[in-house]
Length: 298
Image 1 (spheres, rainbow, N blue to C red):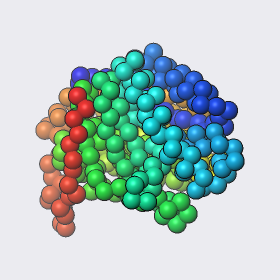
Image 2: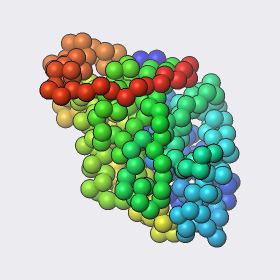
Image 3: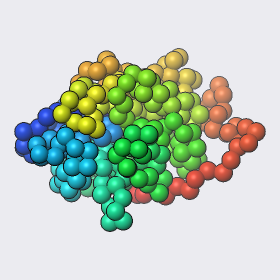
Image 4: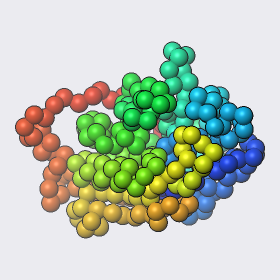
């Protein structure tokens, strides 16, 4: 499929009374995206932290929140897989802290395909909060995903501010870059948005940002959430002059939709007004790129 609709979530962190409440909420969000004709639904970074509220005794503690959410991940992923299969959507699940066997915790985003397959991308560059307070460890692998919609990659929030990660994905043929985000200030939101738009310009590709929104005073991790979802591309033919295909109302709980045409990515890289992808290596000091793993979700 070369032409499809993407849905980017401005997703609120709720105080949940039960697992059933979470399942009802997530199902409603996915069904709304499907009913609007989306083929790809993108949820934000750390959106899964609302699950910490299922344990009232530990939800106010950073370490306790991690343990609660990480323990629920198999159940969370089973729900996302079932929703992807039922609706025919590709779903990037909200990222979550995952406690690994080596004793470290990593921030993991999972991409589910309608055939039930799943690919995982861990965050690679940690923010100060993750390093200094939450002690989240960096992932090791940069992956791209072959899907029925084209080749997709994920740069989680802060990762989008480092161009070599996206560039390695572009070199591997990525057409759509997903940027789930979680920022507690408008400055942070703008940093990610500016990074996302720059990656779209450099890579002559689509970039989809999906943030958490609203307040969750009970959570020490995601208590304040600012931002707006957006879908961006390089300002060139077939793309709006400012490179913005769609942007949401800051702070509102909503889906933001845009139609993507991945054949346009190839056209722009071959015959655009500028050829950023082709000319990358002409930069003084251009460096080698990190290795990329290809995961087949078709």
